[in-house]
Length: 143
Image (cartoon, rainbow, N blue to C red; front, top):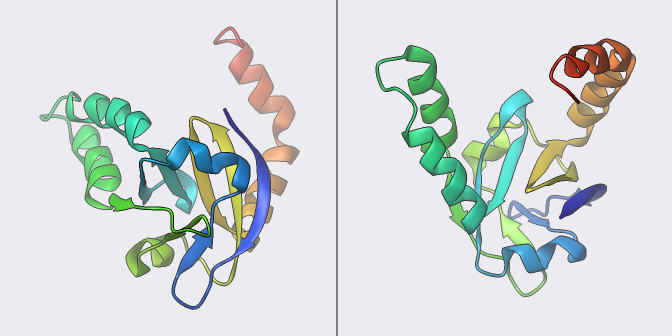
C-alpha cells in the first residue's frame, strides 16, 4: 500500500526522492506518466501493465478513448531508482506538471502522484471545501 503525503525537492538534475517506505514497491523500476489534474503518476511496472492493458482495450473509434490513451501512454517513461532512492523526471513531464523546486509525493494506494507544492495546496484547498458535495455524489456509487 502506498499511502501518505511527503514533501521533497527536485534537484538541479531533475531527480526527486521517492519516500523510503515506498521504495520497495519500485525495486523493479517504475513508469512515470502524465496524470490527471496536472500531476504526474508513478506506477510500479506490474501496476502499469494492468492499467496499460485496460487503456489499450478502450474502443479505438471513440475520440475520448484515443485522447486518454495518448495522454497516458505517449508521456510514459521507464525510470529506475538510483542508490539514494531518486527517480529522474524528464523535462517534458516536469513542464506538464508545472513543477518548480518543491514537490509533494502522495501515496494513492496503487500509485504515487507527484505534484508541484503550490498546485497540490490549491487542489487540496478546493477539494476540502467541496468535501460534503463529493461525499454525497460518491454515496450514490455505494461508497
